[in-house]
Image 1 (cartoon, rainbow, N blue to C red):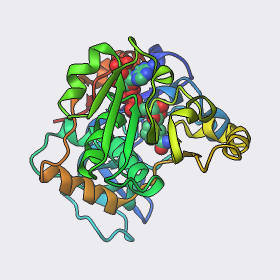
Image 2 (tube, rainbow, N blue to C red):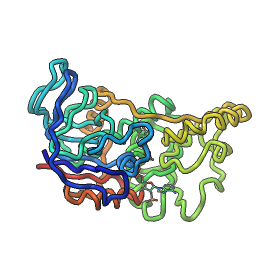
Image 3 (cartoon, rainbow, N blue to C red):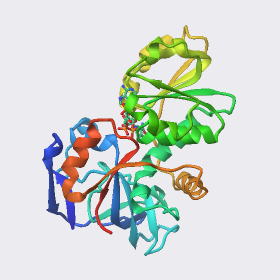
Image 4 (cartoon, rainbow, N blue to C red):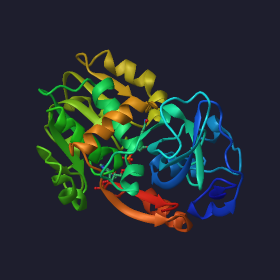
Length: 318
Ligand SMILES: NC(=O)c1ccc[n+]([C@@H]2O[C@H](COP(=O)([O-])OP(=O)(O)OC[C@H]3O[C@@H](n4cnc5c(N)ncnc54)[C@H](OP(=O)(O)O)[C@@H]3O)[C@@H](O)[C@H]2O)c1
C-alpha cells in the first residue's frame, strides 16, 4: 500500500511516499481504508524524534493518529462494527500509522462517523475533542459557576475546548494572538486577551481554572491568577511530569491550588458523545488547510509553525 513514511527523524523533508506492507490486524483490531488524516502537534514532534527514547526508532515509521475511513476487515474479537462502516477515531499504535492507504487500530479507538460532516472534518475531530472533553469533564470537573482561561484558544484543542466549556455553562476567557481574534469570537468567549498586546501574567484576572493548552507557562508562574482551590492544567504531559516535584512544592503554599496534566485516553463511548454533540450542532470543527498526501511535507511545515486556526487535514482517498 502507499504510505508517507519516514526512515529517519528530522524536518518535514524526511517524508517519502513509498509502498509498504499493509498492516495485519490482531483479533481486537479493525482495518480501515483511510480517507482523511488529521494533523496534531504530536505528529511533528514525533517526526522530529522527540519521543524516540520512549518509543524507539522502528523505521520505516508511518506517522499520524487521527483518522476517518471505512472498515474493510474486522478481528474476531471486535463486536461494535461491521465491514463497510464509516468510522472516525484516534489510532493507538506506537507512532500512529494513519498516513497510509490502510491503518489498523483497536476497536476502542473508533466510533461511527457522525452524519452531516465531511471526511475532512471527521478526521480533524477525534484527538482534540477527546482531549478537551476528558480535560474539562474528568480532570477539572468544570462547573457552570466557574471561570476558565484557555491559553492557546485558537488551535485544534483550544477551539473545541472553548465550545465544550460554553456547553457546560462556564465563563470563558480566551487567550490567542491578534490574528486569531475574529476566528475565536465565533465561539463567543466572555473575554478575549491578545497575547501580543498584553501578557496574561500581567493581567489582574482571577480564575478557577487555567487551561494551558499551548503549554508555554508553568504552575509557579501563573498561580497568582488562580482563585483559592483553583487548578492549573498543562497539556504538555512529558514536560509536566518532569515538573512534578516543583509543582508539589509550590502547591504546599498555594491555598489549595493544584497543578495537573492529562494524557488523552482512547474511548469509543467518548467519541460517541462527541459525535452526538456534532450531530446536534452543539460543537463544530474548523479546518484551516487541507493537503493531498504528496504534500505532506508542506502540511507538517505549516502545522509546525503553531499558528493554525483550527485544524489541518491530509486527504488520502475519496
Ligand atoms: N496530553 C495530551 O493528551 C494532548 C492531547 C492533544 C494535544 N496535546 C498538546 O496540546 C498542545 C496544543 O495542541 P493543539 O492541537 O491545540 O495545537 P495547535 O493547533 O498547533 O495550536 C496552535 C495554536 O496555538 C496558539 N498559540 C501559539 N503561540 C501561542 C502563545 N504564545 N500564546 C497563546 N497561544 C498561542 C496559536 O494561536 P495564534 O496563532 O493566535 O498565536 C494557534 O492557534 C500541543 O502541545 C499538543 O501536543 C496534548
